[in-house]
Length: 200
Image 1: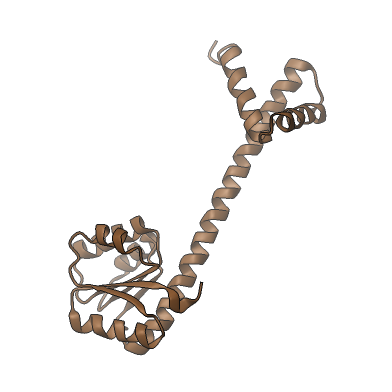
Image 2 (image 1 turned 30 degrees about the vertical axis):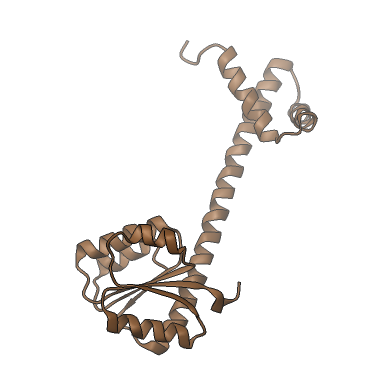
């Protein structure tokens, strides 16, 4: 995706500050810029606009406004660059926890908008990749545990070696055109239903 083709949504109640951000984005080659000045019903508007990245400018945010924007950040699953005039350590930590990709304190200048936006997109993509890899690793670990349990069931019930039990799982998976982990899960579930209950 070419960076300049990004659809950018700017959320800013202050029209002058919004125009600074918009000018910085357009100067950087971003032509698809939408500016919203009213934050009421913002989640619905984001769903309608479907931006690639969101820039939020909060001139003097109170705790409730920050929390609302952090909840929005968790919900939209998009890169978010947030500009605030002042902040404290708790707000910075809350922004990180909420997944805000760039949290800029007292730094709203036209020439800074593009590099901050680029960094927000890069950080979001890196974080998303790490989250996806973590989920894949967890899923792989869970699959291995289920396969090991299924091998144990086959070894005990059929007197097979570990290698023979795995070969039988693999052959069954191939014959049924399914994943080994799916076959293993079916076997573990069936054994749980057919075997003696563990509390007996």
